[in-house]
Each structure stands twice: as C-alpha cells, then as structure tokens.
Amino acid sequence: MQGTVSNFNEDTSGEVVLDSPSELSGRRVTFDAAAFAVSGLRFLRLGQRVDLDTDADGTVVAVRIPTMRA
Image 1 (tube, rainbow, N blue to C red):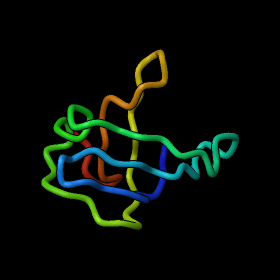
Image 2 (image 1 turned 30 degrees about the horizontal axis):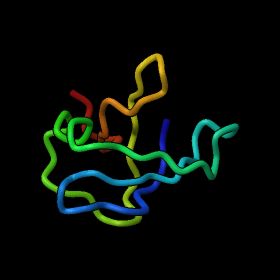
Image 3 (image 1 turned 135 degrees about the vertical axis):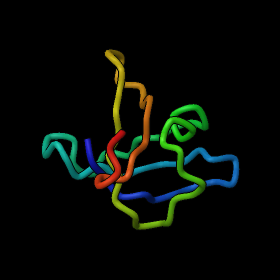
Image 4 (image 1 turned 180 degrees about the vertical axis):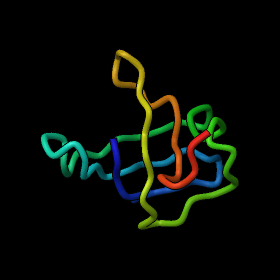
C-alpha cells in the first residue's frame, strides 16, 4: 500500500492517508513505533510518500520510503 504521511509524532508513530490500492484511497491508517523502527529512518515529513507493509490482519508492520527497499 502507498500513501501520504498526514501525522508523525516524536515517539515515531504516525498516520498515513492511503492512495493505493484505489479501493482503499482516502482511508487513514496508523502505524506504531515498531513498524517505523523497521524502516531504519529517523523521521518522516508531513506530505511524504511512503509504502506500508502489512501482516495478514492488516496491521502495519513496516513503513518505507518507496525508493529505499531493503
């Protein structure tokens, strides 16, 4: 899934507004510090585009910059 960062807290949790896949467009998805830690990033900017990896339950398990795949 891809979306735009709409909120990012100092505790490294945040919220993304999805735009891909199209059937989920506009949906707000939160992520926690553990999902952010997987990225190896230090912070995110509001409006920044990100990829979200989810588990079978739909919980965000990783937040990544689209051009930075591990």
